[in-house]
Length: 339
View 1 (spheres, rainbow, N blue to C red):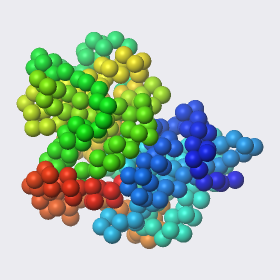
View 2 (tube, rainbow, N blue to C red):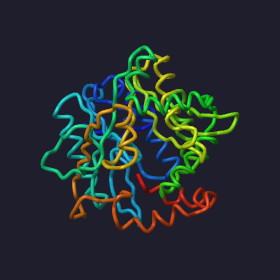
View 3 (tube, one colour):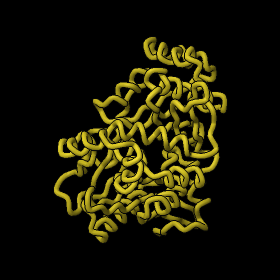
View 4 (spheres, helix red, strand yellow):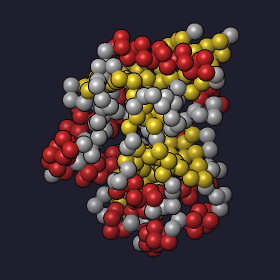
């Protein structure tokens, strides 16, 4: 039997995610609240049940945009998604329901953000990889595991006198992040989105900021799930490059996480051939392909909504020249549909 998630069953849903070997932070029920509250998109969180126990779950988000297309995504605004199931019958049931719902909604495509290939017959986007690495229990061993050149960047940040602090709110994070994404030509998310993430996920959502002589240098929002840490939204101010603020920041995430007993550092998604891809490889992480598979409904080909698409180059170049205050005001209107 297929059911739709309601708030009364959030606890059962999350228990299933936490206990399933393929569960991720991005399968948690809180994303339904976050996405509907911060962006206004309809979230269809579906699950199957047998004898009162959940046997499979699928978080879906309907993003319908005049600028960026009409798609059903698991999970929008997240790097991982797709169905997690205890058995093939439950998996197939949810997969068929997702395809049916995609047709009913009249979307361009259904997108499943899988870490493993599930449907070889469906097209997928050979664009993204993820970077994950096992951490040592000893911080110094993790430092020595960083390749020499990158380790030198971290030590320069330490020698510069940078310090890390945990913020109670998202104000400094939004400031640093908005400056970074403006410089990359990308619209920033609203402060409301970051605030909602913090409110919904509580201790699983941490904001770490880097200071130099009391001045903000960089900031990152980290997600904690089981024995993993995922630095997800991060950015630096103008001084970050000079003081090696970003290098020091990610080291501090790693160092602090080890102190909490974390065993996996998930550096997240990057596009092949980009600066962030090279940066993460320089830390000694090995890229792992992500399989974003599509079930095409109205679209004749896989949607190509990403900054590497040539048709967005003029927009990106123009956005980089915007005053920061203008990008902060206009960006959230655009980014709400860039799931």
